[in-house]
Length: 349
Image (cartoon, rainbow, N blue to C red; front, side, top):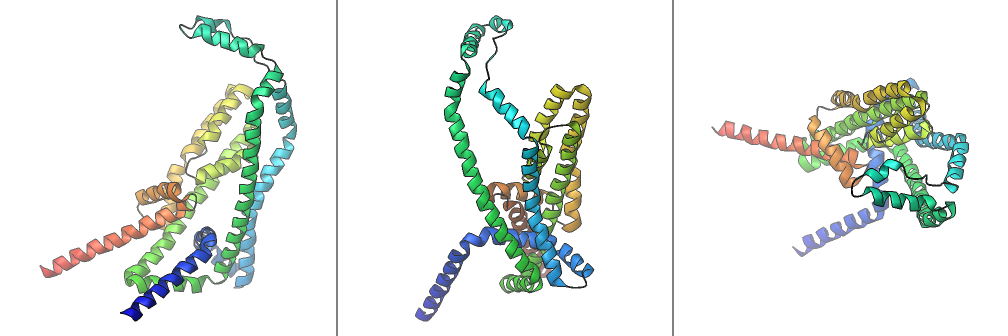
């Protein structure tokens, strides 16, 4: 008993130490596994086209992953550079901003009208110097926030580079890693564990195909509409809509203000045209996403939806993949357990 207890204690200590050491890399490992499983068929197809040269296919896939970050950054920076004159004009307007006099109809509002008019008149009497004094603390807070976000962006880029390195390793040794994962699942739960491992891979691939691909198409179509309508910073807004679509928020927070701006600046015809296009972009993913998911994994859509939203709220963006996998595997094991009990009862009767 003493020997067994010491062995278990040593094993638990070894597991704890291992997890503690790799803890900083766990998010990158999870992202690498999700990306590799989702894009594995693409790697195999690329390897076949390149004469069965795995190393060359891994190099192409790794460069493609790097471009997924470099391209949006370049698009954002180029958009800001192209519109720097607009930003300077906005800055000059803010430095000399004055509040206009209150309209006459404001005093006719019962109860609160006179007070609002008086307060508005006081604000209008204040010159630009007063406004700069009032806004100075908020400007400092905004500057500090941007500096913090810049640091977070740098850390995010480092994490992405680590994720790309893990992806390259998994691409090069995918079959061995998959065999190890399936063997571990079989060791833990027998045939049901092996089935759960395959189901987890299908769930990741289905979510990637249904959510990521639908989000990319949705953001591109919405961005084309903004560009044609002449909305400023269309490239930057497209990148923002892609992030919102992946997070299951959708492009509506960007498209609705854009439609209002087009109505004001370009008139009713352009505004109505962008409104119709925005409604199409905001709703067509509800049809496209289920079709794409069903092509890769035979999983109830309610599990996908609950897993995506719940995983996003619980674990962040990586939860988009982890949530559906956990629910899909749990659902399958539960169904197998219920069916096994039903079969046992039927055989005894």
